[in-house]
Length: 402
Image 1 (cartoon, rainbow, N blue to C red):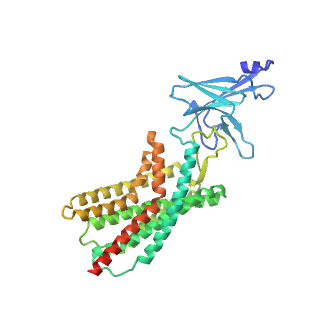
Image 2: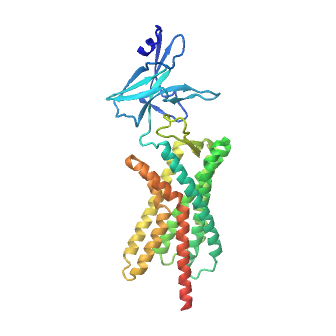
Image 3: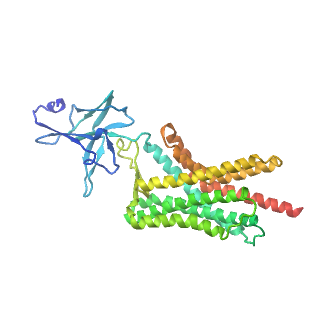
């Protein structure tokens, strides 16, 4: 009121108090402190550029500071279909115990916006996006080269035993996983540029990305199952149409699930926006958008699916480690097996478990570690496969020379 009186003219001030989370809702689904919105207006004219800002106080019983709460005002949308958004420009935020004090140089609707705990800054989001793009590009190229190498090196021959039958399928299973990784990296790289395209095309891209992710996870489980058969069930193991059944599980089921969701509930896929902690402070930085899941139930279902597969892979890894620990006679061979098993199993699933440590002080370091390791997963698998392939070739040449 003092800021208005500083203009030298007595005016009638109209105040409106609103307690609702639905009326002022932006595209980011931002949360307001106690769902309180206070509107202040002059009866005769709009007010802006006050020399002495108006002061609005919001009381609360939470632990708030500049990192998780900021004073904002409602800025109506300019175009048709645009409802508006919250903006911080012209407002300053001060925190006292139990109170957020807002000083603004204009009159409109005001609120205190709650920022997500541990949200990324725009600079962090930009760096993670660059890392993902570079890593996925390298992985896509590496997986394509490795697939060509697998095709050139695979020489089908009739299995002479059950164990030989399992070994003959090992390279083929690797090829399927690499194909799924190539599809995942390619669809991920397309998901951001296509976010600016038509809604239908973005939904198709999001469904393709979702299907690729589910297939990669399923082939990780297939790798773990195959490893379990090779190292644990060594006697009289023969599964008819083994590779076909694995393919139906790892390609068929995820694809069927995604197609069903896309047909019956297409809105599950669409534009996914990643907001930042400074998104309302810096209007020059646009939040990152890509084509992905827009439904919370679908997101949580995917997390449950991934957690079950990672749990299975971890149990298999633990079992394999126990077996290798019992090998005492051939210590050199045991060390070689350790490298092989850890290189295979860790690269094909363990690093994805970092996603479950996205909280507290671990959030930012975990996100960088997760992004680096998993965006480069295709490249790491390529290096691992080439190493094992070259070692087996050298072993064959050595045995032939003898």
